[in-house]
Image (cartoon, rainbow, N blue to C red; front, side, top):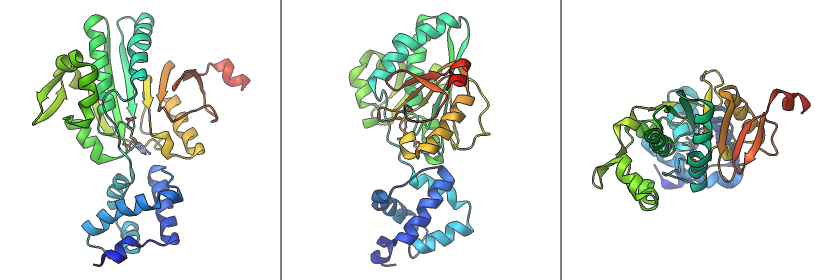
Amino acid sequence: MSERIQYEMDDACFAHYQELVHELAGITIRAERKSMLVSRLRRRVRALNLEGFEEYLVYLGKNTVEHEHFVNQMTTNETYFFRTPRVWEYIEDTFLPEWLEGHPNSRLEVWSAASSTGEEAHTLGILMQKFKDANAGFDYKIQGTDIDTSVVAKATIGLYNGRAIDRFRMARPACFEKYMVGNDTDGFRVVPDIKKRINFSSLNLFDTSAIAKQYDLVLVRNVLIYFSASDQEKVMSTVRRNMDAEGVVIIGESESLNSLQTDFESIGHTLYKAKSQSQRKAA
Ligand SMILES: C[S@@+](CC[C@H](N)C(=O)[O-])C[C@H]1O[C@@H](n2cnc3c(N)ncnc32)[C@H](O)[C@@H]1O
């Protein structure tokens, strides 16, 4: 198989891939990201010993089990512990004390939607456990979900090294020491008390029927950027349906709900809460 064939993808073929990734994952791949799509799919075309991208399209049409591999290639999974420090400061200093005051002796339900390899959910776990250690009446449960089955598998193992934990280790050494176990050779994982409160599963955020829970805190960070405005609205309406009326949503630094039609109002940079019924009627 020649390298030349693998590198070529005409516009019609690219348009088919754009359609397919949107249909399967809601992801919009713009024309300027064509080279990214080509380089990611090249690996898969090679692994399957196919001649090129046209043939892979035909293969995808005939083999729906391949859709999972295709989607896994199309996702961008960048993440690390304590990404965006101000988010964690808000959760620790404001959200958790306020929530406990309104819900003594209850369990906080948290959803890390688009959890990738799990660093976000485990960061949440560390802060929740720290809070629990100081507040006996508090408990928590964290659900991480992602469409990409390969990152869900890694998150479930939950073993981290290098870049994923470097900043955490430097910025919060005492916390790292207390809540992470392991070594540089094998990697580090959260202590069992945290681990047992975190669960990961695969979920497409466009699959509206799959979740049926009322979360108190939802992190849907750095995933909306991959969706069109109308698709972002669909995802946010799913998030709203699965949230407590008093719940809080946190989105990514480069994302905003302000120009979208949603049932959320801003309560700070990247922070939102559900609109009340009267606000919804007035809108
Ligand atoms: C850049 S990572 C964000 C990870 C983490 N939330 C953070 O902010 O560090 C984006 C994740 O969104 C996931 N994703 C993309 N489309 C999705 C969809 N339709 N449903 C669920 N997850 C999706 C990708 O698989 C990827 O792991």
